[in-house]
Length: 134
Image (cartoon, rainbow, N blue to C red; front, top):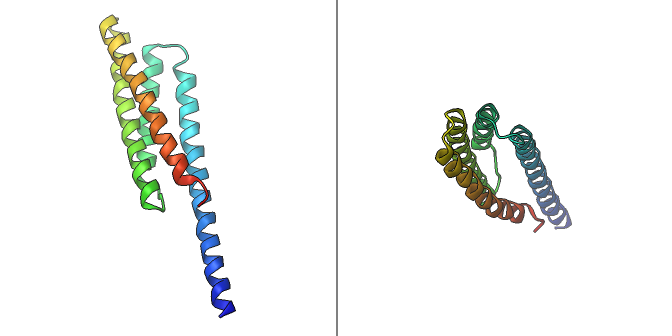
């Protein structure tokens, strides 16, 4: 009986370690992409937002194949991938507006990126909750 209890406790410990590893891998990947995007868009140019578009698209693709482990984390990572795709579209539109010197387009797409940044904070809070020890 004691062996069974020890085996069950070890199994739960191993699963928790896998969850921590998943969350750390997720955080490293997302933060690396966001740091790159932040650096690129420090100067708002068409080229910068074009490169940011590619970074957002790459992030979305990586998240599409991410193994979330739990259904909650998988759902929230899927939603973050959708956020990254939306941000890629808004960045591409902003790059185009900057390239064509379209002030209305610049304003609309800059606001869309701001709205997406607020949405991202909500998703990140849920992911943080998914990654907290239980």
